[in-house]
Length: 342
Length: 107
Image 1 (cartoon, each protein chain N blue to C red):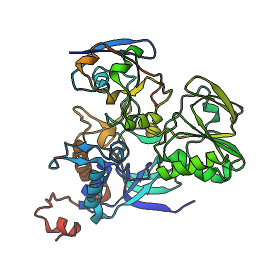
Image 2 (cartoon, chains in turn cyan, yellow):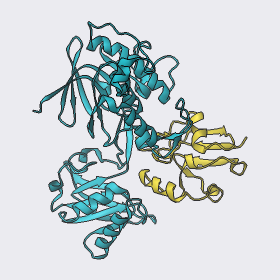
Image 3 (cartoon, chains in turn orange, yellow):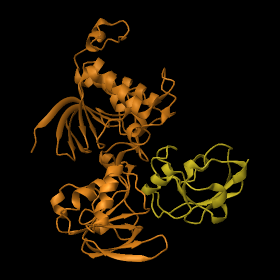
C-alpha cells in the first residue's frame, strides 16, 4: 500500500472552481491537493468547450475555456498545488474531528482536515454504447480503457470509434492482437491525420480490417465475447470474431461515487449551507455546479464566490486556534508576500 | 413564431414555439424536453442533443457541417437523417419542423 499523503485540504475536481479555491485557500495559508478524473485541468472548460468564448467572467469581456483554465493556473502558481490527474476519488471516511481519509482509483490515500467537492456535473466517464446485453461483458471482455496491453495479445480485437483514442489503440494493439478490426460509422476519421494514414496503410497491407458501420449485437457466454455483429448503412450485417471490444465514444458526466458519501442531496446536487458551503457532513464542502441552495445559479462566477466563502470556514478546521483577519490583496503586505509580489 | 414538433422515442409529442435564431436544442431545453441532454450547452462537443430529422424536412434542414459530422461519431445509432440539434438554427423556413429523439443520448 502506498504512503498516505497528508494535506490540509483535498479538492475533488480541477475545473475552474476547484482551481480558484486553491487561490482563496492559499491566501489563508491552507495547502491543497486536487484530484481529477480527466488527464488535464480545467474540467468542463477544458473538456467540453476549450475553444468556445465565455462572456460572463467578471472583468474579462471574453475568454475561451482553455484560456480561463490557463489564467487560473497562472493565478494559483504561488500556492504550488499538487495535482493528481486521471484519478477519481472513491471513498471518504471520517477518522477525526474533522479529519478525513480519502482514497482514489489510482490507489492513493490522503489524510486531510477538509474536503472540497468541486466536481461540476460529476466525473467524466466513457459513454457506454447502447448494445442490448452488453452489461455482462463489461470489464471482462468489453473495456473502456486499456490498462494492460498484454491482456489483448493474440485476441480477436474489435475497436470502435473514429477519434484519437480509437486510432491510437488500433496502432498500439494491432501488432500484438491476433486480428484487429476497427469499426467506425463513416469512412472519415477525426483523429490525427498521421494516425489515420498509418491505420489505412495497415488496412491496405491486409494486417487489419476496417469496417464502416455500427456494432449492433454481441454474442458470447459468461462475460466472454465471441462475436460482434456489425451493420453497415445499407443494413447488411456482418459477424466478426471478437474476443474483446474497446468502444471509444467520448465522455459523459456521471455523478459517480459521490452518491455514496452520505451527503444530503437534491437529485444529483449536493445541498450546502449558504454561508459556508459546507454540506451536512462537517468539513466536507461543495462548490460550483455540483451544489444547490435557494437561488443557485450554475455560473463560474458563483463557484468563485463559493470558493472564497468556504475557505473562511476551512480555515477554522485547519487552524482552530488562529483568528482569521480579513485582508485585501490590494493593500495587505502579508497577502502580497504570499503571492510573491511584495 | 415558428413551431417545432419533438417526438420522443417513447412516442410523447411536444409541439412548441421556437424563437427565431435560437437553436433547436435550446428550444428543446427551454421546453423541458428531457431526451435532449445537451451536456455541453451548445458547443458541438458532446453529441447528447442528437435528433433524427423527419425525412420530409431533411432537405430544408440540410446536412451537418464536417465538424458536426465528426461529433456525431460520439452519438449512437447514427442514421442518414441524424443531426445535432444545437447546430440547427430556427428560421421561418423551419416552421413546422418535426424531429425525433433517439432512445439514448450516451448517459
